Amino acid sequence: QVQLVESGGGLVQAGGSLRLSCTASGRTFSMYVIGWFRQAPGREREFVARMTSMGATYYADSLKGRFAISRDNAKNAVYLSSNNLKPEDTARYYCATSLTGGPDPQSYNTWGQGTQVTVSS
Image (cartoon, rainbow, N blue to C red; front, side):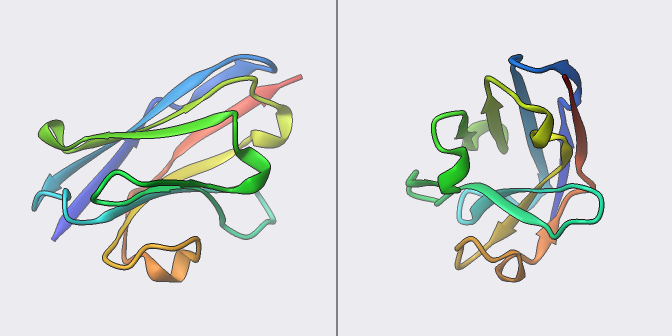
């Protein structure tokens, strides 16, 4: 069983940048697809980005160009870098693992507790 812990969230001004980290403990997660999702109050959980075990990356169309996912299997870590943040990016950001991948949160079976990102205008 993999356990995931997200970190790196916080308060940032519009136009700023952040790098979120997702660290895994337990089993190595190099075999998994790792996804980043976000959820704002009153809204459904939304796909942000994912990376396969082979390093292929996929992004939500609306976020492409501002977010970048990367992973360091040696550190059992995945990162989500963001720039030019907007107030509408305010949400709790989660990482999750899947054996099959895809943008549907239902395909992911292990989740971290999330890290809050708040973007002020």
